[in-house]
Amino acid sequence: MRIDIITCQPGLIEGFFSQSIVKNAQTNGHAAIYIHDLRKYGQGNYKQIDDYQYGGGAGMVLMVEPLANCIRDLQKETVYDEIIYMTPDGVTLNQKTVNSLSLRKNIMIICGHYKGIDERIREMFVTMEISIGDYVLSGGELAAAVFTDALVRLIPGVLNDETSALTDSFQDNLLAPPVYSRPASFEGHEVPPVLLSGNEKNINDWRLEKSIERTRIRRPDLLDF
Ligand code: 6GU
Image (tube, rainbow, N blue to C red; front, side):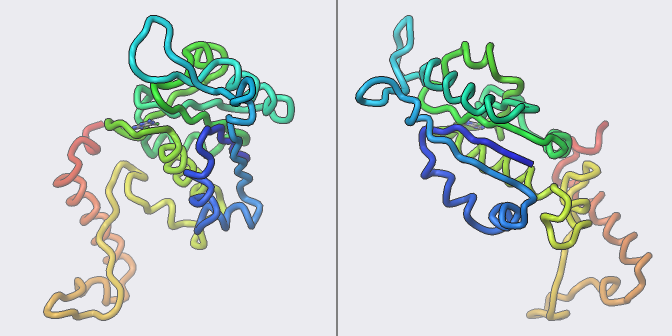
């Protein structure tokens, strides 16, 4: 999968992509992630990328021309399956959306800032608008990092144990069951005996039962479908 991210604050996410699972995914050739600095497309001596909004009101808007030029430059090299704008007024991201987008080959992500981006970019280029939850961040960068992490870990071969993404919380609309490691007894708190029994069927039954119980208590909304 190839992911191109357009941002006016590359420093906010460069560190994230040079660490851990997302970094390994790139080293192993499963993902290619490119960060593009919108400032390079800025206008005039000051490389201007934002301006006041028509009609007045507080807050700057990312201008249409630098963004359009940047998007078109990228489109010269790559045909994108989706051009996604990260915005709090987009559709709320969930595992189902991540699963289906993980099958795409080339994705472009646009990070907004200030009051947002000129609406014409949304009309002319954007194919999908994604929010990561009902709260407002200062910019789309952290949201893009969250979204990219969720995507990249689903690419086959990225996780060490290929099946482990399948038992994550939210796959099958169920939260994950509790997990334990050594020691079997810690300060009077015991690991459930069934997990020590070696009986695979009983262990799987117990895990499913705990998943359902936990989902019913914490996220009953996931169960009504
Ligand atoms: Cl995608 N962007 C911003 N700025 N805030 C958010 C968000 C995105 N998702 C939730 N809050």
